[in-house]
Structures are given as structure tokens and as C-alpha cells.
Length: 445
Length: 66
Image (tube, rainbow over all chains, first blue to last red; front, side, top):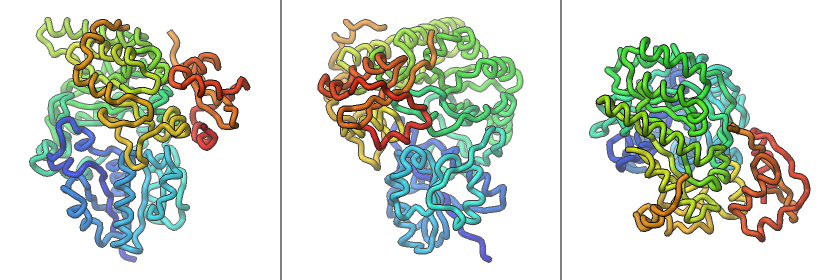
């Protein structure tokens, strides 16, 4: 029997790995951990695969020839890549009528009916793919069209990713000279090593709800995380900074205390890093937060502040208050002032801020602007609320006929209407600076 | 300080459909719903005791929402 020719397709913005993306378009250049993990598992099982990336092409005409001559393609379909994934599956079947299309990813979990309706998707893995991928590729005929991927109990059960299996960026992409490490997107110096120490935020924000779809897994050990950075530094470095892409890094105090103890000593260098927290947990564990910032070089603190209004935070089921947000802002500002006075780098917020939430009044939005301005030197990331399939509020707004989002387009950034009845012109004007007096007069918190 | 105390509720509408809400208790969930719904939409919610659902079961109820 001849070996199957298998192609992984990396989905993303055209030109994203050619340096032809817009400024700040970090989604266009980030590498895909899910894809790399699955390719690593297959290669370790002796199943070779190739990779093609839309991000290494300037348009569809340049991409299509990549699909010729393969027996099977595999795609990790996130909601915002559902449209391109469908196009690719159709084109692949046209070129290779006996070819098999295997798909998985978050959209299979949050919108299985949409995935199942795509005739060209032969097999859809709902849930994690790491334990199913080898059998699926070898014996796809034994699997139904839609099936549940078995869960892994521990992240330590995953192999260490072979990052050379990521698509290779080409000049003038800033990723080209750092490959297989990544370029900086403004969080810390390049080359950047990205990793995940834990999976799934346990909270139930109404715009997200990832806990509905991904079961919690045992977190990686502190040593394992540090040793991977050390290995990447020795093999491909020197590293400039790291990113811990966990949905909620600042959780599990015992783990964090161990990280404070070991990272400065065990790491080849205490690289500055990006990681995410919640404002209410910062308020609950302020000493732990401060120790992490000061002692482990946590220089970019990502927090989903979302809003400066308690009412809007309630609609989002954030289970945080404006007081929590103010506390976290003031604490990091104070730490930053002290570090700067000592000639050290000020830690910054990667501040997730959301406008145009259903039910939000103009005064609520002014409070959010006031909250944003209380931060010293933040990196803001602005969104207009987007009713995603899979989230509680997204499902509810769709059922009420209020969603304006196309099924094939799930991007969240500001500047595009997403919900009926929201005055987007007001928000565009707000972000253009047309309400300075009102913002100044509005209290926060 | 409370952390993660909210329940997810399914309220029944007069047309038989369901509406998702969240809060400490049904009254709190209705208050939060009132922030984004019109008085006419709020009036469609019956006074029947809402069902509490588990987060992982959310998708089972999507077809009933209105």
C-alpha cells in the first residue's frame, strides 16, 4: 500500500507570513499551536505530512495549486476561519475527487450543525483532536462524519511541539529571521517563545463560555514550562521574551507561588513575558500579583477589563466590578511608578476593552473611556461586542434576531456593526475623540 | 468578595420559547436582562420559575431560545 499524501492547511490572512499584514494584525502572524501539536503527534507516529498556508500566499489563485495531488487535507477551523475552510474543502474536492477532508477546531464544538452541513467535510472531530488524530488519519473510514474527540486528562501527556512543523514565514515577514520562534507584536522583545501552561478559563462570561466546550485539564508543571523555554533558548535562541497564551494564567495560587520561586532561578534568563489575569483575582490576591510582576518579569499583563460600567459587566456576566477594575489598574500603576523610579521597565496592561454591548448607554461607554485613561501607558485592544455562536449571549441574540454577523465572518474588532439597534456611529465618534467633555465629566468607578 | 456565584437560568416566554439569563438568583437575572431588553420584551417573560442549567449543557437548549 502506498502512503497517503497528507496536507495540513494553515488558515489565516493572505500575506500574514509574508510581512504583508496591517499594523497590529497579530492574528495574521501568530503561529497555530493546535496545528503544530497535531502535526507533531502524527510525525512521532511515523505519519509524514506537508503544510500549506494561505498566509504564505497573496491571494486564492496563488494558494489553489498547493492542493493538487493530495489524498487528504486537515484543517483546524476556528469560527473566524469557517468561511475560508469551506472554500478550501470545495476546491480540494474539485481537484482531488477521491480526497478526504478532515476538520476539527473550535467551530466544530461551538457550531457543530454548521460544520456538519458542509458536504465536503468528510470527518469532523468535535473536541480535542490529539488522541484521535493518528487513528483518524490511518482509518478514517471507521469514523462517522461527526464524532467526539477523546479528552486528555493532563497537558503533560502532550508531546513537546516540534516548532519546525509550523509554516515557515518568508522575508520581509518579521517572523522570517526568528523562525521557529516568533516575532514581537509589541509585548516583549523578539524572538518570542509562545506556550500554554493551562487550559480553559473556568469563568462563564456571556461573550465567551469556553468552559462549555473544553474540559479542564491538569496544568503543566512549573518545571516543564521553564524547561521548554530553556530548550527553545538553547536550540533556537537567544529568546527575547515569552508569551503564556493561557486563557487565565493568574489562577491556582500554589502553582503561581512555585513559579515565583523557580522562574528567576531555573530559567536560563528571566525573560519578560505576557500572560492573562482577571481584575477580581488581582484584587483577591494582590500580594501574589505584585510578587509575580516584580520577581518574575511579568511585563505585559493582559486583563479583560471590558467595561467601566457595573451594568455592562453584569450583561457580560463578567462577575467583576468596576471597583475590581480600578483596583487592578491602580495597583499596576503604583508598581510601575516604583519600578520606573528605580530605573526599571514599567509593566503595561494589554487591556481588552469592549464597546457596543447590548444595553450599554452612552454614560456606560464614557465610564469605559475613563477607565481606559486611568491606566498608565496601556496597550489597548478594542472590540465591539460580537455575538459568537457558542456563547450564551451570542446564542440568545441570534434567537432574538438581533445578530448582524454573517455565519462565515466572526471577527470581533471595532469598526464593524454586529448587533441590531446599536448606534455604531456614536462608538466610531467616541473612538475618534468627539466626546472629550462628556468623558471628563463622567465618574469612574 | 464573591467569585463565580452566578447561575444560568432559562426563563419561559409567553410563546413557549426560552430566554437565557444569569445572576445570583432569578430576580437578579431578570434585572440584568432588563438592562438590554425593552419593556415589551421583558413583558414576554412569564412568572414561571426558571430552570437552572449547567454551563456544559448550554448547547442542548439553543433550539428553544427566543
